[in-house]
Each structure stands twice: as C-alpha cells, then as structure tokens.
Image (tube, rainbow, N blue to C red; front, side, top):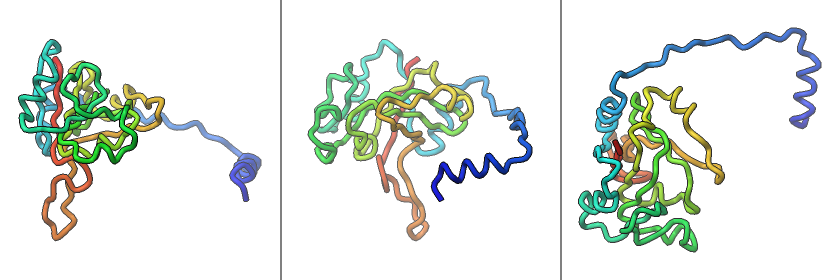
Length: 192
C-alpha cells in the first residue's frame, strides 16, 4: 500500500478527532544565560572565551592556536584562513585541517550546545578539523532547547547540527576517547 492510500484510508476511518493538548512545558530559565552557557560548555569538555564584538577574531584564533598551519573558514572577516570550504573542489581537500572557524547561530545554556547551520558548500569542515572554533554572539544565547528551536533556522543547503563540546565516546573498553567522530576540541568565542 502506498503512503497516500494509507493516509486516505486512515482519514476515511477516523470517527472522531481530538485537538492536541496544550502542554505548557515549564522549561528551565537562567538569570545569567551567558554565565550558565559557559559553565555547561566547560562541563561537557568544551572551552569558552568571552570576547568583545570589536575584537579581531583572526587575532584571537591565532593566539589560541599559534601552531595551527591549516585553518579553514568561509567567514569573510577571518583573514588567517588557508582553506575555504566554499571554494575547495571536494570535501577531502579539507583533510588535515588543524582549526575550522564557523559562525554559530544559537547557543543553549542548559546543555552548552550551539546550532551551526551549513552556510558553506562542504559541511565536512564541521567534523574533519582537529579543533573547532564557533563564533557566537552573546545575545543569541537562550536558556533552553525549546527557545533554541524557536530561534534556529534551517539554511538553504538544508543541513545544520547542534554541537556541544568535543566529539567523545566511552564505549570502547569504557575509556573516554576525545575526537572519536569529529573535533578533539571545541572552543566557543562568545562576542559580548
């Protein structure tokens, strides 16, 4: 049976419909969302650096990662980028990236995650780099995921992901392994 046939049958045999209940979820709220975001991000293994909106992001990244040779970013203001995920021929050219710098859209204080929409051609840059730097404006940090979902947008390319701290797993012999599936370290630059 095809999907449309199944739905038609269900509609024909529905005798009574009920409105969805109003859930009224009392989601957690923080008086200091930025402070809580910092605390939670660090608790999950991430690092947060609070910077001024007037700070040069390139200079901050260079200070944080002085030995980085390959820095990937499509952010126009990042003058130190050696690779651009919009102009590489294919994703594998991003292999060997020491640091990727991305723009975050929404941060969530309750779990320290940041919504990173795919604004670049090759989304592999989000996962292939050794270190990930996410630039996030402080006024884009909310208390909980309910608010986060309300403020996030799905980009034209149709992909984005919530990132909370570095990639990690502890399923192999119960040993914590950092960078198992993506970046070994995540730093969020919160612009205030």
